[in-house]
Image 1 (cartoon, rainbow, N blue to C red):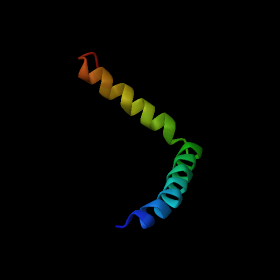
Image 2: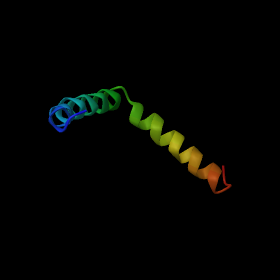
Image 3: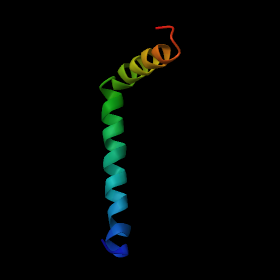
Image 4: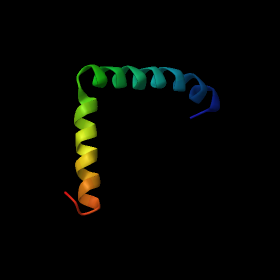
Length: 48
């Protein structure tokens, strides 16, 4: 891929990524991910 195409491609991909993050936050996925992260961390240190 040429430098010119890469320069034009980052903006739409960044906008798509931001839109998907907002959509996930609106659906309540933040709490799900946080709960899973807490469980994994507790398992790693041997508490959970």
